[in-house]
Length: 467
Ligand code: UD1
Ligand code: CA
Image 1 (cartoon, rainbow, N blue to C red):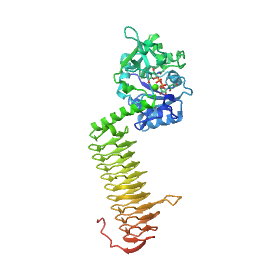
Image 2 (image 1 turned 90 degrees about the vertical axis):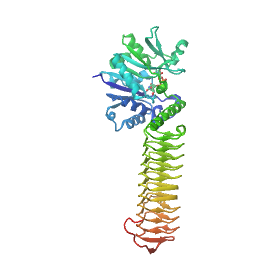
Image 3 (image 1 turned 90 degrees about the horizontal axis):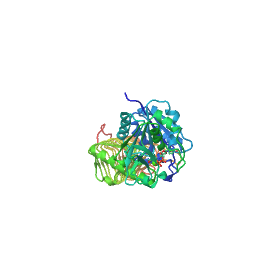
Image 4 (image 1 turned 135 degrees about the vertical axis):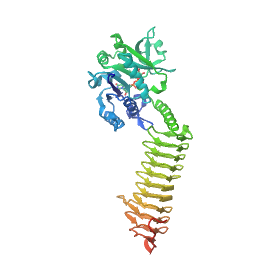
């Protein structure tokens, strides 16, 4: 049984180079915060605990972290340490000392601004650390342009000596391409001893965590290094340009995964799908589609160009035609929407329901095979099965103060340009004439027309469920 691994994530900094009012680790990448990406990779190792060091916008960063691990086994093993003043990465670790000092095992230290690291890479680092019996083990990588990163200094035999920050480098050191991407595994006892001896004697006047390996080595501790070839995976985000570059890489990874799972992505270069979106087999995503948040799309669907789906739950065999916006809404299966439909705030289409051109559906449910094909607003409405809504229909749901509901029962036919002044109910099997303004409930099987609408005649009742 190997010794326990604890994780420490540094996330207290503001991120000056982002030029932002938002703490850097709160910036979003593919639908998650930078910190959430790091947390998810760390959580995949099933560590004994995860400690996040917070400082700038501490409360918000803390709640981001909790949200990222909510409903996972790690939720109960997540703890926080406050670094009230940001005096460097070493100082951040010192601020969390009470959370890990005295614990058995090792501490995997990560930075909250390095979001693309894979769990398998972290696992390789902790494995190398444990198997090598090192006091500390560092990931390293090589960059053509190492600017901005700490350099790895080795002796003539290739033995690790120390890390030197860019700002503290001599010209010779600056020419070194092997860098510190900021992934460390420390035996807790050795790290704790080294923390006491960190100083601020450097160009930035900060406590550098990067000095800890050298101090440990000087005490006779073994330092392992593991060269990681895929440098882009370890890129830190310090600027908006780096954020965009990371999104480009992550986006391609997401699309490759979906294609491997049997999704057709016609033009990966113009398709934007957030991390965590699920899409079923044989679904076709046409060019220039954006799918965000916790969206889930079933099998055999077609999502056409210029549509944006946010937290959309799309069942099997649905067609989302060009230019639709679907937010927090659900298509249960075999639906068609658009072109240019807007579904939002809990719009829900039962199987085979259809909404067409320039139809907005808000907080409403359309029953089975119900159709609203043109130029319509349905808000706070419940429509039964096999209802047909004529062009230009509006549920007048707002009286200037409050929202009211509209109920349209099964097999109703609403004529073009009908205004339904809510609260109002149209009984099953009824029909409204074109241009009706319905201000009071319509009994079943009635033809209404006019302004305000009146019952003109009773209709013959149909057999149950007939078309
Ligand atoms: C750091 C490393 C550098 C490495 C690079 C890799 C140090 C001294 N330098 O530099 O060797 O090549 O990362 O990406 O560690 N943070 C705090 N409290 C602080 C300062 C920072 O929590 O007082 C957090 C930040 O929120 C951030 C992380 O630590 O998430 C890294 O800090 P940052 O200032 O970005 O370090 P780099 O200059 O990139
Ligand atoms: Ca950084």
